[in-house]
Length: 391
Image: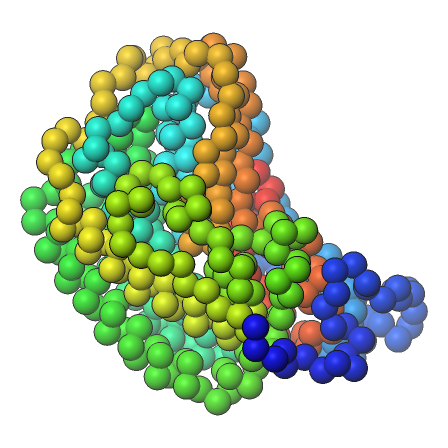
């Protein structure tokens, strides 16, 4: 790992558990709230910040300002009725929740999906990752005042949403991945329209490279901010590109392959600087990697059916049992723990998302010693979906 850019004399230098004890009731400190607000990746959660001047000395997260209580809602609905719920657990990446819920139900029920259905699922997941990370780049840039990039990224995400609208009939919540496979076949000529969108995204990523990553202001504010020591990755449960930016090479697609990822040619993208700038660079590169994966999937996708036959889903009794399935979302590892008691309803569904650890324990620690002006950029860099916490 390269030399850190954090001062050796900084009292807030990251250590695992050595946090200064302060009298937060002292008159030298002032308390302010940041959020909740909808625009931006920071989303519907609030930060209770205690400041000394403009420096954060204490941070407490408050969630639950959007959707909440998904897990209990699912216990009162039949399996097929849960899909309008799960896709709202992370709005920018709904398809990972659809896939994981479906995969858990399939494993408990002993259902094997057709090969083409698995390839189409992988296509949908990589399109979702590309859309999310493209939008995220704009959010990261806008948090430091580069609003033009935010407009570029949201516009190009919309091109992918156009594809989802054609494929599923919906732009945001798709409910296309269902138990047994996917709802229906790809539209005629869909691969060509996907390729046209990928080329547009490659072009805008090239422009973002020039305007964002070569920008002196962005470099000055992002480099050295939010340093995460590699030793924090396991204790804090850090996953995804946040962990890979710290030099820890974990990726569920490689470590525990699912769908068709063991048949695709790609390598983990790993950094080492472990700051906001490094994480942004990694995610830019992962957009380009997802584009390469999408092209492989479209080129190698076999023919055949896209969905296995199921019993009447409104009276579907899954055999009693329990399972845990996982996937690599754009934010890191997502997992679903599902328990069936043999009735028409799930007995228990527990969702493990990256936001729970990243945006609570980790953010509250990273915020210490940071200027209030940089909190939005720091929070964006660890990728938050608040409903994933208050689930």
